[in-house]
Image 1 (cartoon, rainbow, N blue to C red):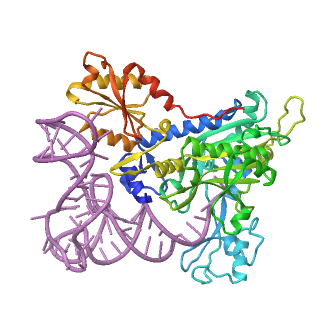
Image 2: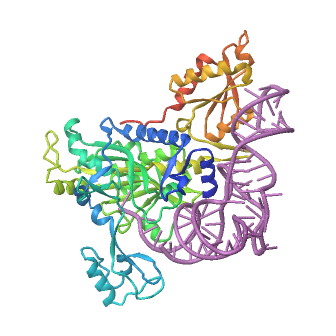
Image 3: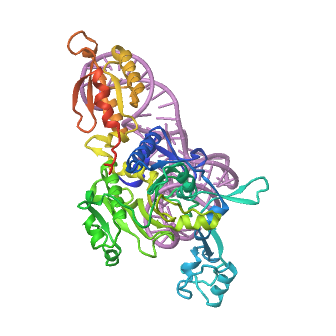
Length: 501
RNA sequence: GCGGGCAUAGUGUAGUCUGGUAUCACAUAGGCUUGCCAAGCCUAUAACCCGGGUUCAAAUCCCGGUGCCCGCACCA
């Protein structure tokens, strides 16, 4: 489906819509409706079951969304998220100063004041790349973070966090103390991050407020032991820098073991690449041939990363590969910066070891982007039908409960729906219009199971207290006793967990 | 931010050039009928993105804004 078509369908079903819509909408902000909210919850639960489930020493926490200025100064976001921007007074195009000055000053503009950059612009007669006029302005700083007036005086500054990861780094020392004081230690956060994007686009892909799920694994740089033999033969769809430079866009399947043996990547890194690919493929159900691990070059990597592969998925609605997650080896950048910034020694002292500053492996996942991915890849038409083939444990509604004839079977069906809901099964009762339309509505919402109460359910005889159980993908039915329903349905609602070491 | 395109019920649309009661389908709600896969009939609800201007009269023409799409730029 095309972007607009898919978005229209999601709006119509109440999955999501523009924020402040009655005022004309707000660029880059979206609200989730009942289906979208439920789906998002389940995706977050599936993410946590999988990634936090990698170890007993990985834990979810909820740090604050607001960061004091000292934190973002230490993290590098104040400096590196701020790009001096120049505006062309003639055509009003906006450029990063660094881009415009690429030829006359290849070493970059770090450390220069706006006035100094302006001086370089005019003394070198730098022209506007768009209209070739000489009317480039003195640069002004543009920061992607939302700044806040903090406190009564309003003179102190604070920022909405541009990534959830910072809270994990700030909490590391406390987590070490309250935990088992062992490495690796994992800190996971699911929450909002905020960026003042210049041009929000493509609905859930570039938002100003979005949900990230991130796992920071703190480990001993001298050794992060993983059961690599278990994943050695797994094939990974990688697109490495050398092949990209030759113009290749398709990934090649490479054995995990070869990425280590001849690919120059550490075992612990490849091991987590495998688990990340398995999550996208086996848990979210994305087709394997649409997934690509895209290696970022020295220049493209974020300033803190040593190794970075983006997990990209090819989406029809956005006509190409889109980044839905990433695996970052951040080294000791974060803890060392926060050690310096705070004046606190963040190194740890494991039993029988010299003190050390842990390194960080970051597994990051864009929740909203994957809501879009799950819509793009699983929502579509089959003949006359529109159905959303979500994995059953992600479906917003697990089971639809209908009376075949509303007048006769409604009380029984209602009671059944309540009974299932009480067992923790998201059930929705529907007695409207015809039975066929109810099935169709549920197909479109991704509901994997439907139960229908009919005459046989109520009649004395062998079928008493049985209902039909209908499956979304095949439309086949079978008769199941009421008492067996929970046992049939509940296992399908549990998200997969990784095999632990 | 730049260039181009677009904006009409919940969704998709006709009407806009050439100003005059806003079309149709699906969806939604209710009724009759039917009773296991979007059936039929009847009824109801429901829209011209916002603001200004021109005009006796604006969905239609003009100006400004907002939002969306495509491309460029940007993208920790």
